[in-house]
Amino acid sequence: MCQNSTSEHSHKHEIELDRNILHSNEEIAGKVKGFLEARNILALNIMSSPGAGKTTILEKTISYLKEKVRVSVIEGDQQTLNDGRRIAACGVPVIQINTGGGCHLEADMVYSGLRTLDPASNSLLFIENVGNLVCPALFNLGEQIKTVVISLPEGDDKPLKYPAMFIHSDLCLINKTDLAPYLNSSVEKLKDNLLKVNHHLKIFEMSATENAGIGEWCDWLLDRQLKNLSSMHFHEDENFTISLLESPHKEFDAQAL
Amino acid sequence: MHELSITMSIISLVEEQASLYKTSKVKSIELEIGSQSGVDAQSLIFLLENSIKGTVMEQSRINISIIEAERICRCCGNIYKCSKDSPCCPQCSSYHTEMLKGTELNLKAITIE
Image 1 (cartoon, each protein chain N blue to C red):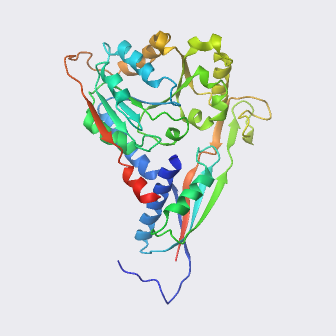
Image 2: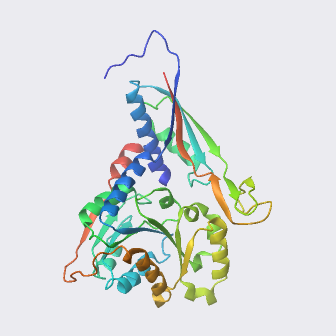
Image 3: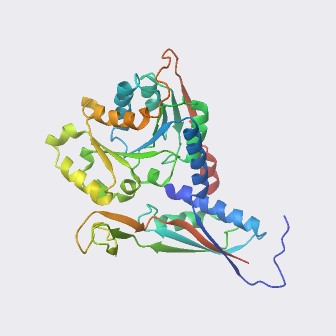
């Protein structure tokens, strides 16, 4: 590389950029979006704190939906195939992405996951993000619906304390409502706080372990997707296996600090 | 720790620009971070300072402007700086409000030599 710096003039030169810092993630998210649109796939990015019940909600949701629409799942966790195995046991195609140290999924992970998963046209795709109520909110994955799950035991003031996630979301699932009698937090207060932060939020209440409220949200999802389905017929005799993708970001960890 | 991903994105954006302008030295960078962006400016500075060694940003000053969250009230039209405690409109107490500013994550400018 040529180095031309030294002598002559060393005047400073400002370059206006005004670029989104996450520009490269946005670009890849655009590719994911195009992929999904071409196949008419409705994709949801499911985010929450660890333990809010994302995977249990997905299990119940899949068992309600899988006779009606094709479903596939991208599972994000720092480690283990545990959640991927739980989803595979439901009989739908799943890809497990392990982010290693990473605290959220990024669009490039989803893009490579999608290419391996090869989801069917006219289907639903759930992307279960790494459990974290802060970081995943910032990274578009090319999904159409950002969904945040909040469980009642987390406290009804969470939307006020962690507003970014709720500001960025389109849909909120309030889980573990069956525990209300044992808690100080109330569903009504939680809903009130959710709408204070983002009055556009569509809210569903449920208790996934009790299978309560699952039907209502699934019917809403079907309504969003079914109108686009050209065919409802599909074979159910495929054998699904889990594939593991290591996070492409490990090289960053090694390089950075 | 999404600030690490953001740090790496900043460095790669700046390196891209430096190579475009054929310089190996970036004097300073200007960042714009919204107060509701979910990015902690202190963590970002810490990570940047520890990641720029050997890059075109090694000698860079890092200037961060924090953009205060601003909302507009759908009920009374009031535009107001949003407090950390409550997003509600201080004029009519409505929560029917929209975010105008505060989620920025921008690389505004760089200065090269």
